[in-house]
Amino acid sequence: MNGTTNIPDGRVRKHAISRRGFLQAAGAAGAAFAVDACGIEPARVEITRHDILLPETAVALDGMRIAQVTDTHLTGNRGAAARTAELVALEAPDIVVLTGDICEDADGLTALSELTAGVRGSTATVAIFGNWERKARIPESSLARAYERAGAELLVSRAATVARGSTSLRLVGLDDSRYVAPNLDQALAGTRGDAEIWLVHCPEYADLIPDGVSPPDALLAGHTHGGQVRLPGWVPYTPPGSGRFVEGWYRDAKVPMYVSRGIGTAVVQARFCCRPELPIFTLRSTRAAASPDNR
Image (tube, rainbow, N blue to C red):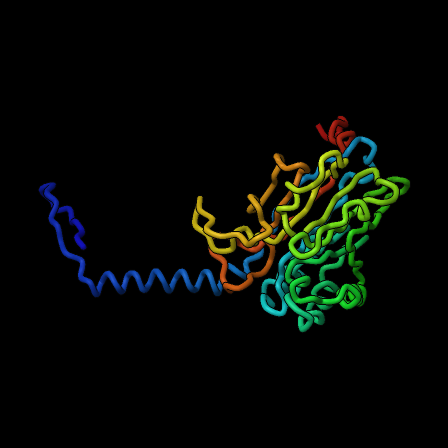
């Protein structure tokens, strides 16, 4: 390879870069990539902040905060999981939702309970299945007990209600759509809340929701890891079940959906240009937002 050197009279002198020098530079770059992707970035959990707009009737819910913990893939990713627990403790959210792939198999249930105990919301903590828990064939009863031990409730095609006074927020937990088709009719049975948030692991489901269903105020999903290893402007891979979704807000789906990059790694124990994410959502009533104090 050739390089150039400027000399005082303005001429440019070419000089050769040795093969050895090139290989040394490439090796250094590769080592830097490996250190960052495997040793630094996977534990650098980033908090992102978002508002979820609610109907005027849900003004009592204004300011309530929800933390989404997803895709920790225990028993690996212990450093990222521990950092997530620290951040949740500092944030002190009202509600924590664990949206699947918290562990990869039954051997991770103890770690799942330990993490859940460390990330509980002050008002409610709920969880759903992910595709790894389904793929490992963890019995629903076993997963439910592991969450119950930590003070959380497993939602499988059903809802839990959080109330502030006479105003209610309904959290609807849908099953993992890769291995078990969500039973939306069962999940939505009963009285609708003043506001409603759905939880699903695989975001592809957002494009599969039947027409005519009354949409929630938001759908929270995970699964994609944001691509996990990517370059600026290029996401080479997302797992089956991601559909067209990668990360962030999608307003063009059948329901408004946020896809978290998640906490852990899977298959390849690395992240690059894709930090782990702890999203914090603040509920905002349109009535409260329009009040003089908020202008």
